Length: 551
Ligand code: AMP
Ligand code: MG
Image (cartoon, rainbow, N blue to C red; front, side, top):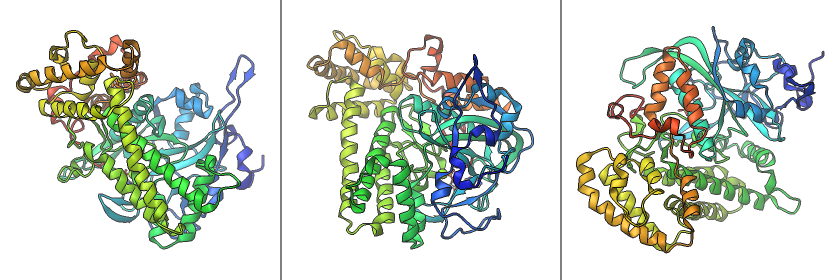
């Protein structure tokens, strides 16, 4: 069969490119997914095809092939994500499929590429960054006619690798694989994970940048999202003064990922304004949702901010155990805590401001951009009200509820109580005789528990009065709390235990955790041991409390 020219790729079957066999169920042929290259086909690429680190000017991506690995094996995969893409689950058990998701076998008709972007890292403009170890294989038009970018993270060097090796370690890959799925099932926007491949190769990392490099197992995650476009994609051409390229990217982004904003009557100005508003709105939603469940991203640089408001680039992230707004899991950020839990809303605003600056020259005045940034603040406040009401099980947020919540959060903070356990137990209190005894299992520190016992009782007294005056009946209150206060979160030490076992070749805990995290709001009596305080040993163990950007 003749190779089609790239511009007509859209109609071709994935099967044709990566040798997926037709899944036949009871003689009924399933629809196979189609692949596409909207990014490549609509935007300018790098004419230089050499895979050497360099500054790539005037182009938004470089075509580059993954570098093969020696002994790839799919050690975990996610059936629901395969379903989204219209892929057959059984294929993931086959050796040949591991070759595909390791990047070893790339049909000559595929055009993998790495994307060019820049970013502000820890508040400083860092210039060109780009996909230094992520390579997009293709876009797939999924079974609901939705578009999914399929990307291999850790697939080898690209022109954007700078001094890096283009690889990812198993530890960070398991963390990304598990957490993106956990986040999805918590109903929080996120990139997804399809496969986790053990490459069979060792790579060297200095985990804490302290002069102790060690060999670690390498891995590749196939991750999937409608698009991985970041704020930094807009910043780079803009910083280079290339307004034309910035505009091309914006027009593409709107056409393919915000098409609901376009209609014949909208002028270009209004379209851009509406787009920025929506990005602000999506970001506000995301940040308030992270707060709802106690997620700390850890590295909210502008190159790690999705234009679609997805949680993206799982690195030194962490989950709040004892409630602490100043906590960051990222040791690289320990001194200033720029990305600490309580600062995420401010940082997201700061990042949106950088995005606004990047696109400002496409606007005739700055006013709509300022309005968009204000919209972020307003939306964040609205979402926060919703989160407060939901976590406390109230029909609607009322003015005094902020104070009620604030008082509780201060108590949790001072008493070192566990955020997840406390809020989950709150739904079951005895409304006639509320007592802090009910929260026995939520405290890390006996002395502090005793010290704040009466304060909790006083707070519970106020809470019960508020609940009794509320419109919601008790069943609805229970339902709302149950579906907003998760029982199971991917605590850092749980992920680390799965990593330790996986490093010894046992991936069963990765599978188990993936399964538990599929239903984070359910009671799951068989997994109740995972609804527990972080163990003492995990408080200072690397990977459990201290993480770095080394991955
Ligand atoms: P991250 O901290 O993972 O968001 O990455 C920040 C930048 O560093 C991005 O441009 C990455 O592609 C790049 N990068 C991170 N690790 C590596 C690596 N091992 N090899 C090449 N580039 C990397
Ligand atoms: Mg990144």
